[in-house]
Image (tube, rainbow, N blue to C red):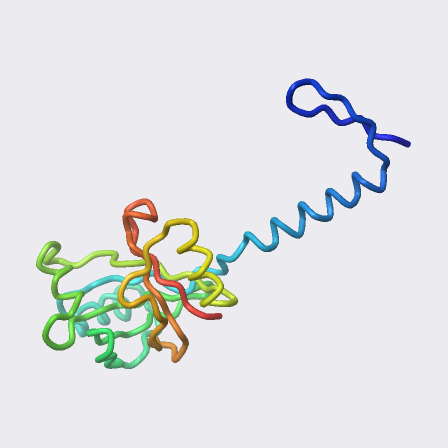
Length: 169
C-alpha cells in the first residue's frame, strides 16, 4: 500500500511501504548514533574539609563512604559516597593551584562542583562535541580519573552553567 508524503512547498509524493520502513529504520539508527550520554556516574561536591564532609554523609545520612584517595594530577583528594543508583564524590583541594581551591574561594562553604556522565567512547564523544562547538577543557586529551578510567571536562558555559565531566564507561 503506498504512503503519501507531503514535502515543503506542497509537493505530494506516493511512497512505497518499503521506503517508509527503511526511512524509519534509518531514523532509529541516527537517534542511536546521536545518543552518547550514558548513566549519571556521580555528582561532585567541593568541600573545605574532607573529613567533616565524610562525617556528614556517614553519621547524618548513614551512607557508606570510601577511603580518601589522592588524585595529584587533578589537584584533589576524593571520597565516594555510595548510593544505590550513583555516587556522590566529595572533593578537597590538594596541592598548589588546585581547581577546587579556586572554587572554594568563591564558595567557602563548598557546593556542587560538577556532574559526571558515562560515555561508551570518550574520544568519539569528544570529537562529536567539539564538532558541535563545545569546549573541552585542558589540552583536550583524556586523563585518568579517580575510577582509573579516562575522563574529560567540558566548559560550563556550553552546558547550562554546569561543569560536565565525561568518563569512559
